[in-house]
Image 1 (cartoon, rainbow, N blue to C red):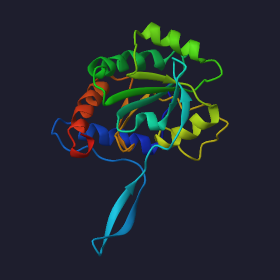
Image 2: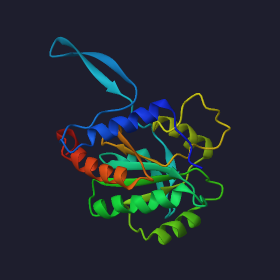
Image 3: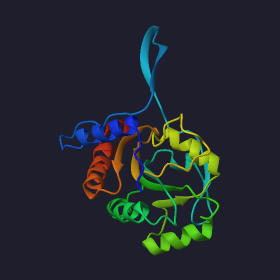
Length: 214
């Protein structure tokens, strides 16, 4: 059964829908942000430091080591799943195939799916899953990492409330998270809803058009 994700992520979804209205507005930047004061040309100016996705270490369906630096300079979409999921994961990834087809030839766009069951989801299992989906190449990576590290990482993607018990099962909510080249969160989308995935595809195009994403 699909789990509700709490007030923060629900707010993100509402905001994503607002900004996906086709008005070509710049996408919002989500997460915590803090003012940073610095000196530029002898003058004190205040800038904003936004929350970013931290470093991580994983391995993909090909057995290749994948770290956060492999996504430097890339726009990407992230989600959390497990290969034996009988409920929302098949729906999510059927919908994610639309994102894959739209951007599989775009070197600036990636898709990453973190397994939340690394004990079962070995490299060979992930490869079989990828083959069944019909994906190939390096546009869409299925990633396996240490269980507690992936769970902690989910906080940075805003798919889990920090106060939740780390011994609980991983969050399994079906959301896709859009991340920009600076590793800032720019949108969240219900991956089980085709209309939301259509919004995501359009928002990637909007994000690519931003001056600092070119």
